[in-house]
Image (tube, rainbow, N blue to C red; front, side):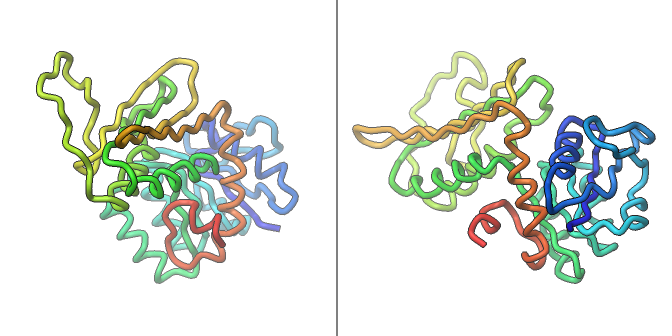
Length: 258
């Protein structure tokens, strides 16, 4: 039985993770932590939220899950590496320097870490397919659509997709635009090659479409998330396999193949 602690347990994603862990046959929700919701009960579970990470040590947590905000996740990762707790993280926005730091920390810790921009397995496959397709097309753009409470743009998934596509091919056609009528109409340029367009829409959860084009043809690769439950199989996969992935792993790809 894997004993799991959840950071940000009072948020929507944290609550969904707590419920998924509680329902999994091989996992136990051992701790729920959120300094802003201490003393509250996690909906759909018997867990009462603690205000401090020390609770995870008191109950012997094996794996922590983090869907908080960037500032909190940075400290939580350092705490996990220092206290030998495996970390599964869905918070986005980490810099290259951040990732280098965590790779060093987990290289010298008995604990391991997994950081993924997206835990929906369909989205992970979408990124993989876009990377595989990139060398065969000269133009590509990404449209990502999220709910109207998302504060960052573009999304971490879109930026990860662009990075992987740019790494797979360095031959991209130049943008033909010479006149911009409305500023920002061509989106943001990611990795110096691929345009990314961000939509923030009430009623949505998360969607992304990668459109690739070459002479006489185009290819569209799209993934849609309709409910936060779509992320839970990937989160549980991370919980189950983080202990077998030494050091720091970026993305779910390695876990799908292991």
